[in-house]
Length: 356
Image 1 (tube, one colour):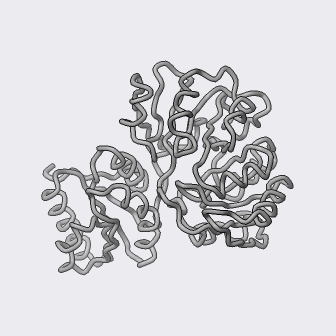
Image 2 (tube, one colour; image 1 turned 135 degrees about the vertical axis):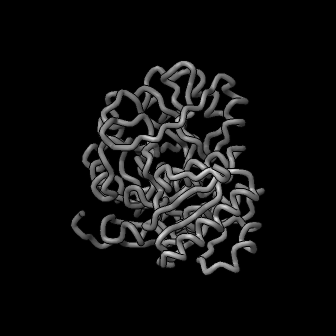
Image 3 (spheres, rainbow, N blue to C red; image 1 turned 90 degrees about the vertical axis):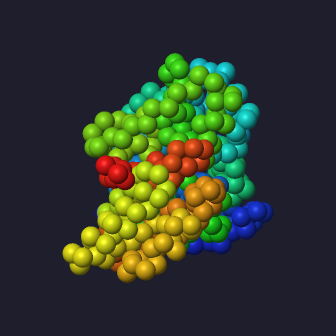
């Protein structure tokens, strides 16, 4: 736990952020404080990326293990060379295509970057967010901003200022409330320090889109069970994005998976447990005859909507007081791969395959 402080909230126009509000938040950053702010993915918890003590405050406020690195956010491509050395041509090609946007690049770090930002590794993770508030705050602060998601460690990421306050009220200095985030899941993370480059975390940019620029890109998902080793990127631990109640993902074809969800739900109900289901819109009608709490995420055929709602849905269903949560595997095509990654980590790897 951290000592409680008074957390202020300032409402900011997400499209045209007011200069005086941005200036006030930037002053907090320059003074070594913590500011939560919206990006296009989720809300970030920001501090100066060049201030070791400020970065340490992020870890303390989130109760985040020191082995989990933090992304440095920039507002100008020239800041990449401030943070990184020997930047490969592939980084510039990806930046031209996807920045500003939900893509993080892992490159070699310069000595100016505090070691704790990168969990002691020789690399640094960098991205340029595509949100007017985030870009304005970075520019006004005059330094790159270190910013993991603005939630307590391993909790579902925040997509509204209210989510931030649920987890961090009394732990941070300031929240910039810019409304709901647009994409709803974190950035994709590409490691450019290895050959061939590796997609470490699927995110807001699909692997198909990335391979249009980087055809040799490989995908090697890692589900690290403990926080004992320094990780190459954030979001790689097996337990991450987790609600308070245990979650199980049910895989298989649509009909079989839905039938298995019904079976699992009924078995749990028979033992006296309260059951919640994170349901795609088309699945919900088939579950309404069961005494379960249903939170809809949107249509499975529209993963952009599901991604936008996912973390809010995880928070909403845990607030119903259920003892366990079931969710159907969304598949691994396009953005659904990112949604699946978050669900599997929220479930700590608990996956049931229908028919087995």
